Length: 160
Image (cartoon, rainbow, N blue to C red; front, side):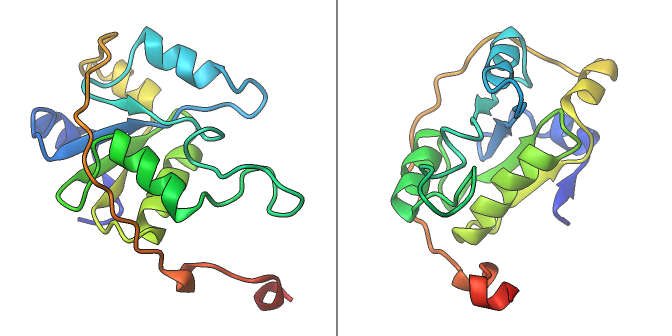
């Protein structure tokens, strides 16, 4: 599998217990919108991850608007979402992959090789008549063990 999975692939694997679906919908101009839309409906079994709360570290003097979370923060967030080394993660959003790619990148950076982005957005999923739900599933936590690959980072000196 490449870094993308099709709607058809995900539909065929919705009941697979080794799959964790992550809803990453988020709007920079309206930070509460993604979580609100998730509560309205989402792909069955999906958990929600907020760009600022879950997929970014605390904003500091340096590091930008959405800094890289620490390994400890990533371990906590991904563990609570039921992700460990045996889990295949499929992330989606409604922003042409921008937020889902952030989740994918973090998982890969922290050593999780089985992370993918849904090819196409949530609106397309719904337009195709694929299943959606309002039900928020209770997800049993798992132990995510971060193994950061520092080669994925560029320092200020690298950029210069």
